[in-house]
Length: 413
Image (cartoon, rainbow, N blue to C red; front, side, top):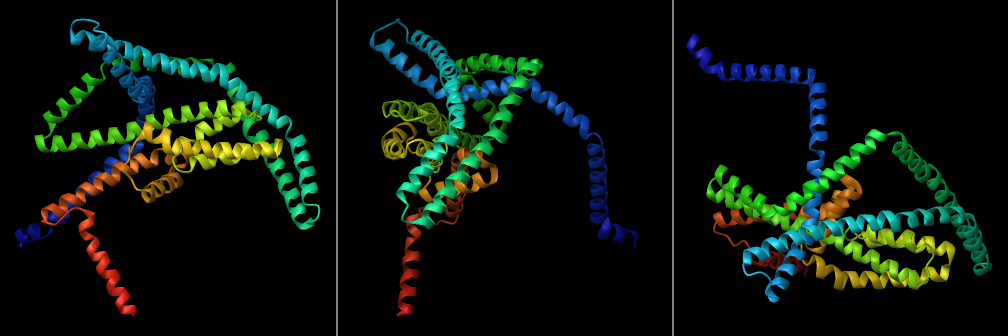
């Protein structure tokens, strides 16, 4: 009887003991969660320079590779150095130096030349918003004097827009700038920590760029040591695909946006647009967002120009349309290529999904992340079909769709 009792209930008793042990363990974990989080935060602060250096190195790596290829080819054509290994070492060192100097030059250019003018444009626009609004209201009344209902609606719209912009600047922009300046002047320790992390991160990035191939080889070596050869090869292929999609997309988007911002600045200066720096920065930054970025950037730029000079707003609209056509057909494909391999629908789906979940950052990173997920699911489906000795190409299943459509038509007839 006793034997039957343990035989019938032993699994249940063991499960209950495991659940009780797990509950007790969770209780002690929650009791110590504060010190645990404190230790994690301390660890995060310690490795922050390493993480920032790794991010910088990952973003700068494509520029470094381009420099290295160009320098190596040039040295080879000019027959500089006798040994090929010497050319590789010299070109690699010069490429790392050149890529980091390029990064520093871009940062200095933004901080010294663009940022002050950007702030000056914002302040000037805010101070003149009431004058611009009065001008455009007068123009509206003159154009739509014979249509009082439309005139009244437009006047209310411009007045509401002025109120919204003024309120946004007073409640969002100025307080944040004041807080930033206060923290910068009073929080000396935080400023020192930030500068320390950036400085150490730049040094870490130099070492990572110089040893990027060795680090990659060590990672592959560890992968094959831990996993069986077949699984290691599969993981390595997946990592390479993720790096190709994610790295090329992010780096390409940054370079593409810098080029678009520079072209926009030159074009707006030639066209003598008001607040040329502000418009160029908005166009360049929003261009990082796939699909919706050009629209998101164009609307406020056109609106800002419209309240200053409606005719120039028309010119700006034409310029932005031409610029986006050049970007979409020439600059973008040249830099990005087919980096994700997603169709237009899945691009739109990924941006809407991740944008809804994570905001602007989700709109930027959603497409490469979804491309990786899509590829993994596609490979899994293909492997399952191959095990069943079925074709994995989508075209092979189009007959089912066409036959079903034909049956539906015949049924309707």
